[in-house]
Image 1 (tube, one colour):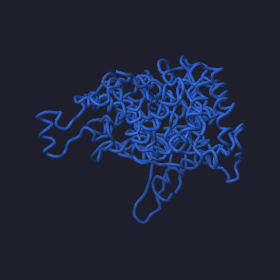
Image 2 (spheres, one colour; image 1 turned 135 degrees about the vertical axis):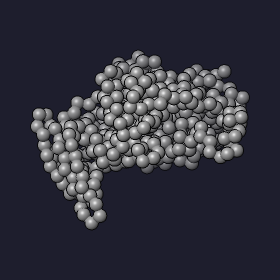
Image 3 (cartoon, rainbow, N blue to C red; image 1 turned 90 degrees about the vertical axis):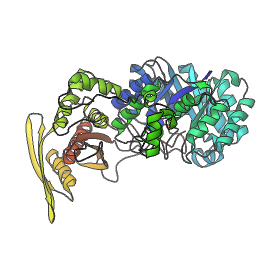
Image 4 (cartoon, one colour; image 1 turned 30 degrees about the horizontal axis):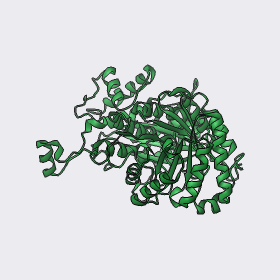
Length: 534
């Protein structure tokens, strides 16, 4: 069977979507799990976008072995050189350079002629080849581009040294039939295509990302780009777990193989949820909570008699075991560690101890700890963070007809700080009190609360994103060396905090204080929008 490469862009295209940003350490943790999943390529980020993104790519390139580590760069000298610097420690580096090729993008965004775009593409690839042997070139918005111009620019990129040519459906515009036809058209006309890898990058704006990717494979594409859980710009990217399991399950119609270790799919999905605080919808294919659930009586009867009546794949095939350890307050560290590893969390001794102590606190309030509870605790507590401030105690008074009042005690160094504040609600009062005590001025960009289980003792998981509060006239300015037509105004640094508890006020306070610690430590979010890319 022919091999299809899996190119994961969770840390780049997925992470740049609203609500999914990760700091360098979180990206490294995710990259290590992607290596266990055995993806072929990890696109670690867009180094020119921000110092945080540069550091994330540098960290992943230095620490992760096995997969190719790719960095994105526009067809611009500064971008390519920055990507090369970020990749210096990589075992198998790849520079992924791109430029838009559709008439609408060339005219309105780049404000370049086709001839200028062609020249920029060739020069960028040629420059990239001075730094690395592995160069990928993408024609942004390829599915709305003139096919003959695509042949020209891909030919020029290949002659300049690109070995992978990517045909992105950047805005999710194509249908499977026309996408497959475009891939065949390019394969028939690009000289020496048999020595090149044709790649596809699909978006889900019309709900056809996976279908388009599979159609392209049948038409000759041998690399698929996508993300875990299908996260990404707008409606998201092609969900890699869907493509992989479609190839795995339908060998009769899709006789292709990947190098993916499918039993790592579910742990990878859950790790991403824990790091970002954003869960997948219950009916999500492959990794959703209901993907292997059966409620209808006729379905339950059929599955009990013969599983294949209503299950075309087993939960075990994606790493979702049927028989699990039941964890509670009498469970030891070993059982907790084993289950965490099954869920994709590989913690060192210090991180495990931190999670285990929180596990015991929660277990005293709950009869049993679910996988979702454990993942939430690991996501909130597992990553080491040098705390400058610690929440020692809080109390909130609220009720009908009264303004909520919160009082807090916070340790900062050797000093205990005390304060109180009123708010529009109990959480607002709590956050105002923390701000007042610490003397910080921050803006709450995002607040999310979700229950990780069922019943009254469900664990509440809170995710917050904060950024410094500044005057509306804060300096911005153009990014140095920005491509003409690109929006390059840097965003304010954002930090994320996670907190888990059966008490949602405690979870909220934990998340807020963790975010403030990151802000005080100068841990900016890694995403600064440069332009909507590939």
